[in-house]
Image 1 (cartoon, rainbow, N blue to C red):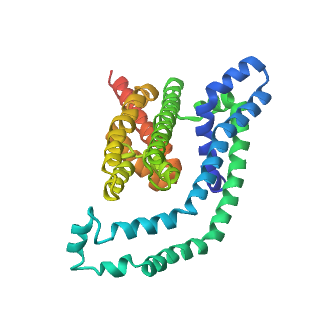
Image 2 (cartoon, rainbow, N blue to C red):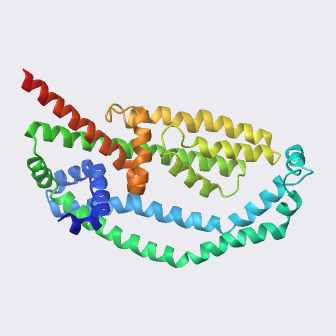
Image 3 (cartoon, rainbow, N blue to C red):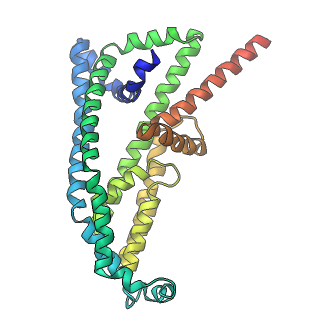
Length: 326
């Protein structure tokens, strides 16, 4: 049975996560329409419009910006490696004792290195196309699975609760804990990461950082890592502005990153997450990193979920042991 279902574990996991997140909306639709099938169909359409459409637009925008990213990168490297630069000249004069700066900053050298990168990207184009087709097929299966999870969610929940080798109260508590952690992971991690990425992208665009949309998207992904996140993007951006002769813009970037992007996490996390996870930040940090390594992108949600379920089972066994002693 496991061998048959193993290829579809990611599909089932993504569908389950999305259904749990959008289930309150589905319940409202079901209460108004009184038709489970139609409500499930509308809920699936809502998920597609809420997630898929924005992702497609952002992907197109990123691809458009990447077309000029190589030229911007070449110009930036040449500028930073200019020995006459008032900002990097002293450092380069010291480094030139160990590295041939003129060769590194020569246009031909940079073009050859960038062409090597371009060649690797071109060589992987077929794999990327195949990956896109595979992702589209997987997306279809996710939506297909979501429909039945929306329509028969209560029955599936009851069946899983009865299948667990635990008392009904304990099984319900563990499943409720799982639901809370999934919701908190999505709202607390993904939503906050998107907010920080948008704020960072706006700052990059306003202050003239090249490829602002690309770096905004990078910030979204890095912001999913607790305790580091957006800091890893806006600090290099501030350093870039300072080294390219824009100290005022660099200062504004630091202020924006500290007071706006940083405080967004501190302000939104208690409201979106609250006490639902009941997990220490250090545990969440390692759970997210471990989840990313084991499950890929899905590990951002599954990592904390696995940890929460493990701790919930420990609590159940502790409670059972105490009751047996009494």
